[in-house]
Length: 229
Image (tube, rainbow, N blue to C red; front, top):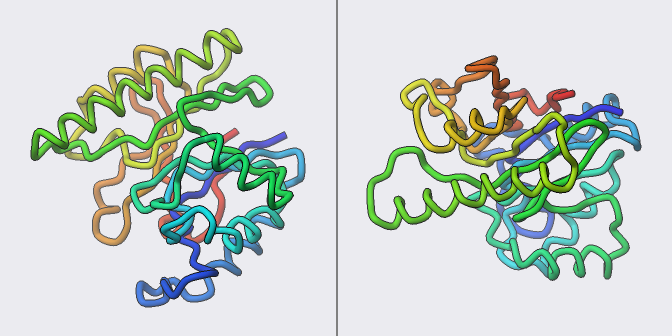
């Protein structure tokens, strides 16, 4: 069983929010083709944020339908554009009502998959420009640590994979509280997304202080899934 990741799908099957204005032509089909070629039903796919452009959960069915028809179990994390995101109970109820059984959410919790613990949080901008930024960043560091602790308490000593939407590390910021937490708990791998266009020049990937960082925004990976484990 394998673990894959891809983020920032920005699906809009039920709303007029085309991504071709950014050059993302037929990208949903590109993702589907690569996904079907790689993923088996027993595999896991991590989607760390910006899944759908919808504003309300009840309008997301077509986007979830697209995802549900693809093979594998999927775990979604909240991104900065996921305005439809709701309570964990509400989202799980919505999927159950629509007979979708192969999707769940990383939201103040953790998961076990083979010899791996899957944890994470949305994160926030690394550059603090206001008191509100500082408040949100602090909240997200607490959520990250709590998610990791939850996984360790439930599943014991296993590899820890952290999902974040905002990058916890950048070329111009390699020392912050997110990184401190990842290193404190000896995280094996951290995946992230969020960055597009010119901002991708600031991406850091590879091994840093024994943690493997992977950037998985779909436009960065040419709309292909990245194998994590």
